Image 1 (cartoon, protein in one colour):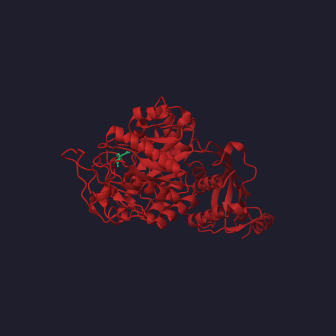
Image 2 (cartoon, protein in one colour):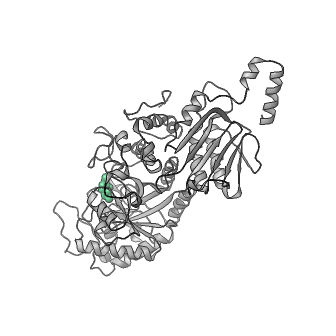
Image 3 (cartoon, protein in one colour):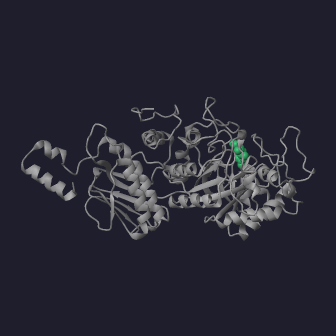
Length: 537
Ligand code: TNX
């Protein structure tokens, strides 16, 4: 029934004084308890939320109105509404009563390029932003605040509480890393991961594309990297790799979700998969001294254990830098984002002087290919400047040194943000070398106070890495990522002044019902009173 016909019908019922009919279509109506809970469960918490206590209804006659440059996000919204409600709104250009309006007109400058306002009254739901990214984040908020259909009702309408939300992120870098080297994950899995990240307004996906156990991206000028180095994984499974076409498909999918892909090739250590693929060209000579207990590179056979710190590129080999240049050039040319991650962690068998030479050369090569270099915190030992980014994971000394040299810092503290850490000693998968990290602990920290000497202006933001030594399936991914990732996303998006665990854990509890709908296999932490008592599984 269209809106005008509905009003006409209500007026007529009033006229006939049918009390029952009047109450059943008396619009506007007050916010239901379900719609209120949904309106208040937004994660990351918006900067400002005002409730006005009425209801906007999504019905069969709801339309989406969007300018031509917003057609892709409008279609994305329509698909999501279809998925959540079963109602499929049509896209139009005429604003009528009851419409959802997406607009790039009239947003305030404070919203920046990722902020948005969401204004909902009984007659309209409107998202305003300066850029499509802001509209996309407003849509994520809408996905979270649509009240879950009341099972007792047979109405084909979905409630949204009325009010206003004004919102923009604290940090430009809100990331997650997926290690596809220790265990390989398919393009479909990576796309699902991208969708899960975007629900929490995360805008960076760092792909750890190579390590001792596997090389996961086609390099046309060095085909054995994938023909040999891509054919195995931890435990000896079949591994895999992305062709350049598949990588481009991932990049494009991420772009459609306003996520930048950051490729990482882990140099100069964690390089066994390349060494065994090209032993003649790359394998260092006997000058590399390995502890007796460490594994040794074996030509033709990637490593299937989980030990680290036994492989290195050789500064003396004639082809080492040709290899690095070819790899960085090929990947940079199919990566639209501005970053290239060179790894740089745990290079235990690279001499310190060689390590510094390596990182300085990598920076030149990355820059020559038009990209900004990122490396794990150990790159602080090299000649960094304000054009480099160091990723803090473990050592405050390295993080401070990098900051003193002018580098920007991404915060991935292993004791808080590592998604591969077990929740507690009973967790079915995960490691615990850094800490056991329950959902409250992963939420209760802030980048501005963790490493006291680093100034706010040098902090890019936060990133939650998922290393996959023990992670084999998408269910494993979901079990470790949920419920911790939404909290890291909130640390990146929401000002610390308005964040606290007591408030957060109630919102988080109310996401369980959303995760069930999204078929997310999450860990039911005892720290949260999950609000999905009607769950079926
Ligand atoms: C340390 S963090 C690593 C990874 C492991 C991870 C396991 C970092 C830069 N290096 O190689 O996968 O621990 O938690």
